[in-house]
Amino acid sequence: MKVLVIGGTGNISRRIVTALLKRNHQVTIFNRGQHPDSPPAEVRVILGDRKQRDDFEQKMKAETFDTVIDMISFNTEDAASAIRAFEGRIQHFIQCSTVMTYGPPFPRNGINVTEADSLNGSSAYGLGKIAADNLLLKSYRENDFPTTILKPSYTYGSGINVHRQVGGDGSWIDRLRKGKPILSAGDGLNLFQFLSSHDAGEGFAEVIGRTECLGQIYNIVHPQPRTWNQWHQAVAEAIGVEAEIVSVAQETLVAIAPERFKGLAGNFGHTQVFDGQKLAQVIPEFQPKTPLVESLAENVEWMDQRNLIPNSDEDRLEDMIIATVRKLQNQI
Ligand SMILES: NC(=O)c1ccc[n+]([C@@H]2O[C@H](COP(=O)([O-])OP(=O)(O)OC[C@H]3O[C@@H](n4cnc5c(N)ncnc54)[C@H](OP(=O)(O)O)[C@@H]3O)[C@@H](O)[C@H]2O)c1
Image (cartoon, rainbow, N blue to C red; front, side, top):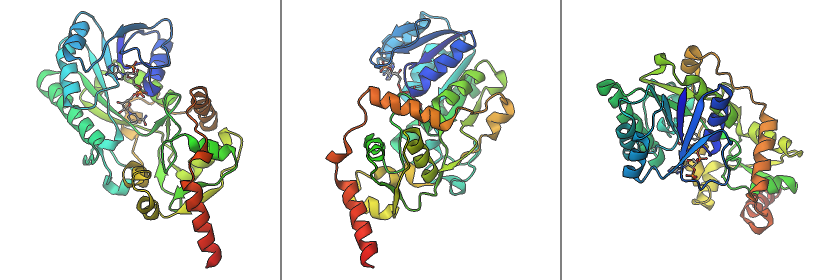
């Protein structure tokens, strides 16, 4: 099949490309050529910026594809442009959406959220995705635009920093390496779903060409949720240390440094478990099996190669919070 991936060199999209090539698809990617990680040699690259609507649509109309996977569609303008570019000319269009369309706050208190649950994107990101997804589904209903919406949960891999509960900057890896304690928000027992980009790539590649998936929305998640404590320990194991975790109430952290810990008030401060049964029923082949610790080691190595692990000694806030909490505990 001739498959176009819009994006193609990023965290998830490069693994989609790998999975497509493994299945002998003919792969083209469209991006600006700015990403530091280059694509495999057998991939055809069309350079351009999808935000330059006329140029993007003209370039796409000059091509023929069976399937398009859109990895960088974030709002109605992106979706409308994709519809103009591909309407009547492809068999399958896969939109990469996100579980952030459900919340926060999440339905069912974030336990086993299904595709039928209400949408409640409270961030600009979530709201933009909802609007893009809705336009594509409307276009499917009214004009047969052959849409499938996939909603990955948090997806780690070479292409982004390994996130932790209290933030996304890479210095926590340096803290672990230096034997420093790390913060968790609350008891660290909130559940989260961590999907490897390798597994996400396999899932996207399995969906293409499945006519039963047209007009459908699927969560694409790891079936086994983990606590943040388990995640932090797995990352520590990947770099060969044990994590010393210090709990501080989430509200306290946000009150101390609202900007720094803003992720806790949004995405990362809630239990989030999404039901992956709908996708598993239609595509039993999708079985996330990438080994956690090894793939985290690969992710950390990627961060090292790109100097994305800052010196934690240059940032004293975490040490100050931990020292204060310990002092208070000792005094009491
Ligand atoms: N990671 C997660 O936890 C997660 C979870 C749920 C959903 N998602 C979704 O996953 C998607 C991101 O996929 P990814 O991980 O492959 O992305 P990524 O790592 O952010 O990489 C972005 C890709 O898109 C290209 N690109 C960016 N802006 C572009 C533009 N204006 N025109 C053309 N190409 C452009 C980049 O190449 P150039 O820079 O060279 O153009 C690169 O290939 C998003 O839709 C996001 O909402 C991610």
